[in-house]
Length: 160
Image (cartoon, rainbow, N blue to C red; front, top):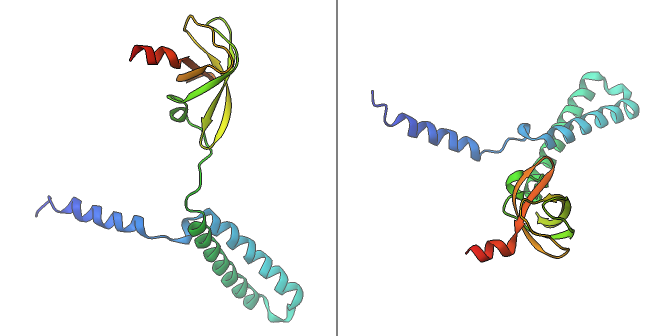
């Protein structure tokens, strides 16, 4: 038995699965599918009660599946490149921002950081023995306790 080829075959099989898109794995499918299943069932029950529960259920199920699949696919195609608005620590560290409220090593201030297409304000602290004034550029070196820890952008330029 040749064990060297099996992982490659397994990787190919798994990589081909990643390329397939199934609507059942989409929250959008379930949202639209359940909504239109219920609306169709309700509308047919009120407007055509003589159809019978089985036929109404089948039509509602088909409508929910069709609309759910269509909307999930359409939103995937049209909105494939959406921006994730969740800010993580990795997004903050290394960002260059501007001081909004002055601060120094003994006080806390506020900085504005450009993140993901918008400007976000953060409470800021420093260990540098320098006073940061409004408009000064700062570099975020750490994030803890809902505060960014910054150093002067000028200090970094002077070191290089």
